Image (cartoon, rainbow over all chains, first blue to last red; front, side, top):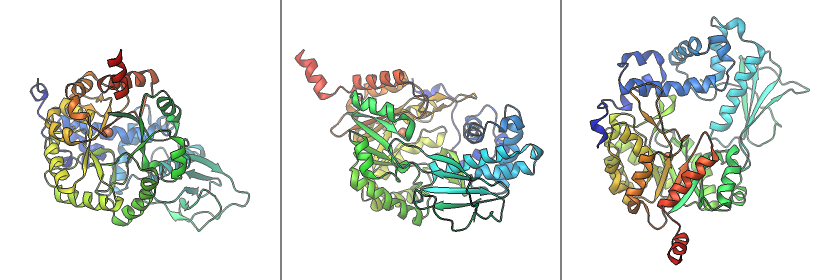
Length: 194
Length: 273
Ligand SMILES: [Fe+2]
């Protein structure tokens, strides 16, 4: 039996609901019982898991469904036109620090979010660079992420304290990339991308 | 039909090595852009079997040319050194308005043809290689236009279709288009994917291409019913698994695929017996 006869006729194209795929507030523009609504939900859930599976401590702030963080952060990210690249966790940190949760953003959470962002760089970046170094003003240690460089390896993340610390970045976070698998240079901090 | 398994990074190396050793697979498909920092000679030494290359994040329909030029150069080194069975990439949307879509979206087959054709021509030329392009697991009605779009694209660019059987079954289950609509394209294609799917959390249920579950009956039945459309010299079928690596389940699925496409030497043994 052709499935068309048993399933509701899909009326939408992905191309018509792209905005809603990453803005939770727009999901409500689609009927709750439509395939479009479920398709949007499927997309939004990937953002949710990318934040909360990687940093489950966030759920201690927001409550178990994460929505008290997820919905306002995603709305802010849309307003700020964040690209949602590897630095998304750093922007989340910044958002948290000016939110009702600000008092609960401790050093451990900052490092967790920094580690998540360098890990995402190390698996997602496609440039010829091999590593990334991330620093937070006022937080001493560096977070270093390395791409996979052996067949059976994976990305690697290190928290590094230098005997002679590097100068602090001008902004809250700064990063630089490494062209080889060696932490042997410092060319100054770059501002994290939007 | 050669049967393969995908290798994306790290933790499943032991599983993949066992599948190779036990001859449950004939080749391995690398998510190649995860390995561009690994010297090709090390990859060659690590896998005692042929390799296929699956490119995940070229985003070649959207990326700027500088990015693609640099990536092509690096991919090319690996292609030259490892001589993969095929090189494949995706027809899908990775960004919207400069923002990343974490769940890839389907392109608009009605309005994007010329751009896609031009980019496929460019990307093939830069890789110095015929590209095999994967069909999207359609969730919504726009996917109805996919087979016709791919037929035209393949005719105009000389690219191949990397036909993902379960993506087509997902689209069928989502009421978008019958998997049979792809039959002429399947007959012309050489490289295939297959994987398990899962239903969406919310209703009305959509079928999602999740790569984390055993092969479904409808997927295996489609493969068995049209096995002669699939089987041909040089054909490959990659079993994709990206989560929930239940080894007994994976062994069973690979055996089910092998039952549909017996090895030539196994068939001879059966005849002799
Ligand atoms: Fe696939």
